[in-house]
Amino acid sequence: MKKLFQLLIPAQTKKIMKILGIETSCDETAASIIEINEKEGSIKPLSNIISSQIALHSAWGGVVPNLAAREHLKNIFPVIEECLATAKATLAEIDLLAVTHGPGLIPALLIGTTAAKTLSYVWRKPLLGIHHIEGHIYSNFIHKNIQDIQFPILCLVVSGGHTQLVLMSEHLHYEIIGQTQDDAVGEAFDKVARMLGLGYPGGPIVSTLASQANPVEKKYTVQFPRPMLQRDDFDFSFSGLKTAVLYYVKKNTAALSDPTFLQHVCYEFQQAALDILIEKTMRAAKIHHPQTILLAGGVSANTELQRQLAKKIAADLPETNFFFPALDFQLDNAGMIATAAFFRHQKEQHPEKLLSTWKDMETKANLKLETIL
Ligand code: KG4
Ligand code: ZN
Image 1: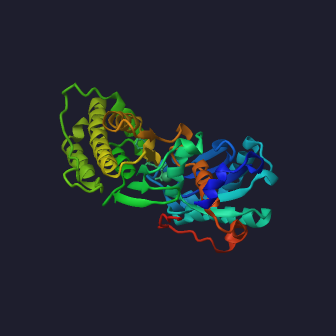
Image 2: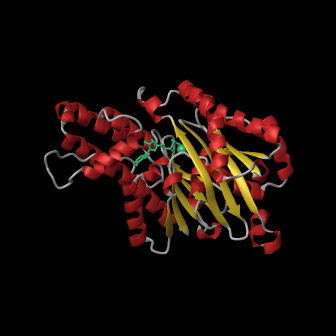
Image 3: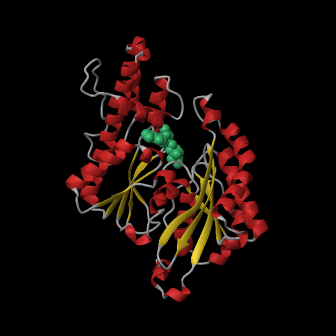
């Protein structure tokens, strides 16, 4: 906490910090430089390079870990070089390196952490390992001023691997008050897309088709279940919804060639998933009274989720602020890793020790989100 108050110290002692982030936990090779003006409290991206492997993995219907690692290895240094060049940043200007060290696919993560450790050693720069979900949460601060987002925060984390409600009473303090008992919501979008033969990743395709549906047209009618809504906890479940879609599609295979059918299934599935997410978030907000509600993770790119949650918050909790990440920082990116590293660095009691992180930083597939008090 003490370090965060340094944001309030006199102007002449303030500085501009540049952090180089690296992210390779899944199928994006990403590097980004974030500039934090400690006087103004502004957080600004100078570059945000993302090399996507979607074309490679879509042939397999999902991410193949060893193929992902091979691509990361090929791309990691060109991506970092492009990141430095785009930011017009010299090596000397980089104050801190940050890398995702979990959770994720081990072969993929190892390329990023090995590259970051090597750069830390060779360049003699401090290095911080960051949790991928911590990065997603902190993506909300990019393009904002630190003071714009007030605590306590309730964050709905929705990605391909996570669906959680996280309560934060202050920076880097995480209390997971609810989570999925089975599939993550992004995974459910991906699986529904696969059932419908729509390709990978499913989220963007399903949401596009859902937006083309005409809900008043009654050519097809179905209502999918909203599991867990009757329970008054903040946990989620998406496997029952996914199975209900599967049975409906199996009963109607002849209709798969009809675009109206595809739009209708996508619309009904998406609305069921959003109803669950929004209802649980609102319930948690009404009990925990956050000052701010945030969205984080790849599914935060879903414009209907953004719109419907914003509408509900404005109607039921008008005093509560609501934010979601800026467009380029919703899906996996490295700017979010650099941004989270700024806040971790602020709380670091012995920043000089970060010069030797390269020796002992672990890379973990199931890394836990760690609270710093
Ligand atoms: O955070 P992310 O990029 O990677 C993980 O950490 O998992 O999230 C990827 C997930 C995928 O499941 C993808 O289908 C989903 O986010 N997604 C979406 C949308 N865009 C991406 N889901 C619903 N609607 C979208 N527009
Ligand atoms: Zn992610």
